[in-house]
Structure formats: structure tokens, C-alpha cells
Image 1 (tube, rainbow over the protein chains, first blue to last red):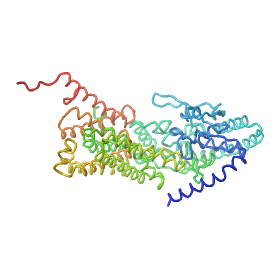
Image 2 (tube, each protein chain N blue to C red; image 1 turned 45 degrees about the vertical axis):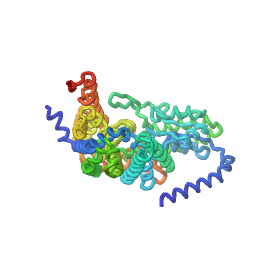
Image 3 (cartoon, rainbow over the protein chains, first blue to last red; image 1 turned 45 degrees about the horizontal axis):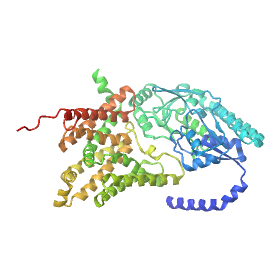
Length: 300
Length: 289
């Protein structure tokens, strides 16, 4: 059933693009932008509006830490007039891909101007790349993206500024909402376990403690001692909940939850947005979803 | 103090006990299969299989999304087709096992990558499929234990034709027609253990526990039964030691178990009575007239 639907969809898309393709090339004057992952793409669409056509490399529910690029990625990079990357080591594969694709577009590092958190892993100190988890940082992302768009397309400068201002207002409202929701959770209950260390900036911004058995990236493997430490900690401090994420194997978190008596919370979105029919299809939705899940598990 | 260091982690933590049981099950089941793989010069089957299961897992993913059951079954079917197909080709043509396996698994891998790209999303399927020794839930433990039981029973039933087919296939072919089916069943057991092992424990641990103790046992003894026993013992010891060291030294468990098994292998390489370096430098006195 699913298979037939896929085949029909694929052939319809094939026919449609063959038919519309040439027309598209003539009619579309949009600025082609390539973003490395969904969160940057969401910001770019909000700031760029109708003037930009944003392509994303790592799609919804994808894992930017371990992504394997495809030839169509190289093609879209070659055709882009602006490239957006996160920086702080999130996309270890992007520099070689840009060189290989021969892309000449300017590259905007969205985290420019942000002071990175340092992450202490066993013997390895690195920058934590998940800066977007703090809304204050997200505003810096939006400002950098806006400036990049203005530099690439000066004619649209007024539109970009207006869009960015409007979106920044929305982010301010979101910040107030998040702060209010977190304030309702008693300070001694603001502690959860997740599967990877993606929420450092969120924790620092809203006085929340996140403990993870994996390291910063989904590539590192947990050691028995780390898992034991977490279980002991949960039991000792009676940490209420363990949260699963949308990009890693849930079994380790389930194991920890079962053994320690913590509850399994809902799904938190860390490194990628959900598909458009999911609960975290845009950055604002993602933050709202995460806060909602946290409040539901910890509020009582 | 010794009790504190060596026993109490398993008493205190259930995940440690589960990890121990899981590695023991895999070591027991993998040891006879590993010994026969080495004797049949098919040692790289494990690594090839880790790639060959991709199209099966991908088709499982296309139909049922990111759920482990369909993906595992799909991987199993793909692995069986590759293993049995390459076995049949090896028997029927001039290509030996290694060439036919290489051909099949590469085709399978390429097919798998293509099928994954059809869906459009960029999830690393195998990353989701491969488990970790520290995260064994009830279903996975039952899977591992069942696979171990079936494997040991299968090897016991097929022992004589399996040994004969490995050591002198020509003779076996002249007295019996059990050679072909034996080989097929053997390959099926290998795939079952590998795919189950991948899903439960990850590729490194599944393949490593099967091959490393067997390679080192080969250097210690010339008797097949002894090889199997030694390999099983080493596998279980490596599992225990790896987990204990990982617990105290805060290093990842899977790789550490394999490193301990590797250490045993290096020791066997130097000191092994049946082929180690020391034996070559200073041979035992031979029959003298």
C-alpha cells in the first residue's frame, strides 16, 4: 500500500517537475539559499519570506552530527547564492562538501558573535554547538542571517529588516512564555536525563539541569561507568524524568529509566525539527513542544 | 575490596547483569560459528554482513518506519539472501567463498543506499538499528538467548557433517549428500547470530566476539572441539573483563570487550602452542629415530 503510494507520488512528482521545470526557471527570481539543517532553514524562511528559496541539507529528524551528503546536496550548494551553517563543529562535513561542490556563494556562520559553552568530555574539551537552544542566541542567529541576506541581495534589505524585526518580536514573546512556564516548575525538580548533551544552552539560560549518558555528539558511546553514575544520581536525587530525543536510539534511555524508577517523558526535539505534520515543525513550535513536555513531566 | 571491584557492580546495577548475560549468550553461540568460519576462510563474513543487511532494513523502514522489529526481520532476510546466495555461487562456479560474498554484499549495500535515498529523509538507518550492550531490554535479551539456543542445538545436530564438510568436502560428497544443506544451514545460523547481534549489541561487538576468540583458539589448539571450548571461554571472559574495566575506567563498553579479546589474541599469537611465534622459534622435539 505504502509502496504503491510512493511509486505514484514519485511518478507524479517526476511528471510535474518535468512539466513545470522550464517554467519555474523563468518565473522564479528567488534568491537560492542553502541551510545546513532545519532550524537554520526555518530562520532563513522567516527572515527571507517570499524573496528566498531555502534548501536544507539535513532534513527533519535528521542528525547533523553524522550526516552523509549526497550529490544533490553538492548540486544545490553549487547553485546557491548564500550558504548558512551553524559552526562550533556541528557540521564536520560541510567544509569539504563546499570545496568539492565548487560553490562560490558566501558562507554565513550563524553563531558568529556568540560565546560558546565549553563542554567537558572525558579528556576532550570542545565547544557545544547547540547554541540555538537558548532564545537569546536564536536572536543572534536571526540577526546574522538577516545581515547575510542583505549582503547577498541588497535590493531586498528593507524587506529583510522588516521580516527580521517581526520575527524577533515573536522570539521575545516566546522567551517570556518559556520563562513563565519554567518558573512554574519548582527549582528542585528542574533536572532531567536526556540521551545526548544537546540542551546545555537551554539549561544555562533557564536554570535547568540536563544530564546525558552520551557525550556532545551522537557518535560518542556511553561507558558503563557513566550509565552507572546516572542511575545512582537519579536514585539519590530522585530525578523525576528521563526524556527521549528524536534522533537517537531510545533503548539506552529506557534502560536507565526502568532501572532507576524515573518516568519516561515525551519526545524532546534537540538537533532537528520534525516533519511538517509533527509537533515541532518550526523553531518556535519546537521550543514550545519541549517546554510543554518538560512541564508535563515535572510540574506535578 | 576484591568483591567491591569485581562483583559489586553486577550486584548493584541491573544493566550490568543484562550486559553480562547478553555477551555470554553471544560468546557461547558465536564460538562454534567463529571457529568454522575461520577454518573455512570466511572470516570477513561478519563485516560484509554488517553492510549487506542494509536493503532489508531499508525496506523494513519504508513499510513500517523506524521500528526495530520490521527492520530486523528485513535485515535478516537480506542477510540470508546474500549469505546463502554467495554459498550457492561458491559451490556451483569457480568463484570461491570470498569472491562470491564480496560481490553479493557490495550489490546489496548499493541497493540499500539507493532504497534509503528513495524515502528522501536522511536518517542513518544503521545507526538506529545497531544497539548497545548497555541497553538490553527484555525483548532483546530473549532474542539473544533464543538465537544462542537455536545455534547451539543446530551446531550439535550438524556437527559431524559440518566438520567433514570443512575439512574434507570431497570425501563427504562421495559418501553423502548432506554437504550442500549443511552449508546452507550453517550460513543461515551465521546470519541469524550476526543480525541479532547487530541489533542487540552493535556491529563491533557482534562480529568481534565471534571472530577474535576463534582466531586465538586456532593458535592454541589443533582439535576442533577444544577450539570451540577455548573460544567460548575466551569470549565469556572477555565479556566479563571488558564490562568490569569499562565500569571502573569510564571507557565505552563494547570496544573495551573487543580490546580484551584482542589482548587474548595477541597473547595467543606469541605463546600459542599450536602456531604461536614462540612455537615457531623453538619447536617441540619431534619424533627421533
